[in-house]
Image (tube, rainbow, N blue to C red; front, side, top):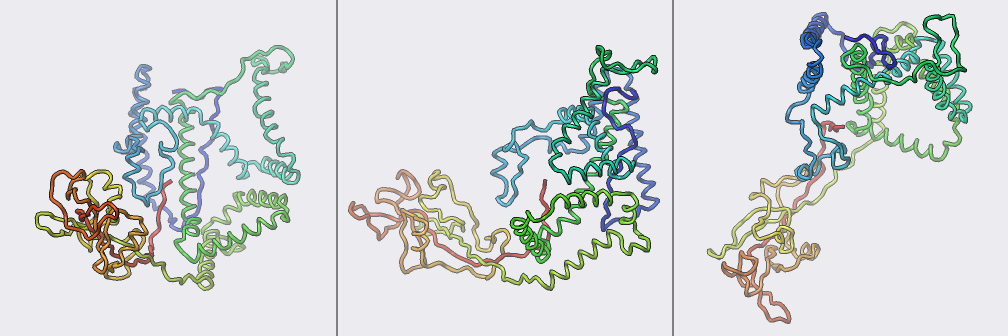
Length: 501
């Protein structure tokens, strides 16, 4: 197995320190849990070592890599989820209340998921990701005061940029010169390796080829160093994500109506102040103070004082206790000073009782309850005679809309059918006057019930409506409906909704 590769960016120091954020549920691990973790890691290492015993054969090297990484991915992702079904059919099957997935191919055309492509892209990325971890490692060393002189030098440059912001465009140009151009020039004019007493000549022709950043060889030590840093970076992201859900989300997702409402009011007030008085704030000194404070708080000794479970006497409470105390104070303030006792909103929902005319028994048969009136101009009727309305056969099966609850126990009949007929501009129907609010379909005298073209079947019941001017009598069609209404009110949900990202 290769050791290192020249001209490659890779973090050859110790593993990057993993971010640790205190949680309310943190508990020290017992010796038995630590021993089980070590045994599990040893078993996994033994399995990997067994798979790499035959790696010496160059002909089977690529297949071993593919089998190794494909085996890992097959354990992570179920086989049923390997396809991409973000098609038009998926959008029709999705619930109206379900959030849209902006990662769908409907919005951005990208390749479908496949294990071979995932494996190849992972190998390519891991072989070239060393520069990311080198930069991450240097930033961690800088802000954790591993070299105090480097941190103080950074603060000096940062202070200069805060006080003189017109020098900010110089920063990327200086980084391009001293981080890329100068090292590349020195690589082409190195000092002779056989005699260090001879100085490098920068005036003559170059004596070395130009340097290029090369990807590390697969399954080399540098390759596994990148995998180590990638594993720690994934853990860092998971820790930050969980910390945001624990310390930020409860204040912004309205799980506590009073607390989130107070925060909303405070942010709105700050936004108004920022629009009117932001030009009065000395932003240079604010940025200077914020940078120095953040860098000072990242010092290991200050971190120890803030995160220690048993702080020394000068610090009466640690960071976790301060956060818990702040949360309790905010909760007590909002509970007493913010009142959200408005009654829940109410709405009126409707359902249509639909009946079908049976020409053989000369009677109307109950059909179902449907949310639409199923009038002659409805899309279902226009689509064809074989398309039937959708609904339920019993009143008890009618459910309230999502997020609402029934307020009364009974439905009310809407006897004024003319209002909803005229409001929907429904044509080709007859409104029953002085009855139970039925609205009938109308057909001409020559047409029959149950067929769109007037072929076959029997005639419907005689109607009292006549078409003016034409002298053609009309008959009632095969459908009639009437409207029922019921009141609903907003339902209070105590659980928290989780949004997928």
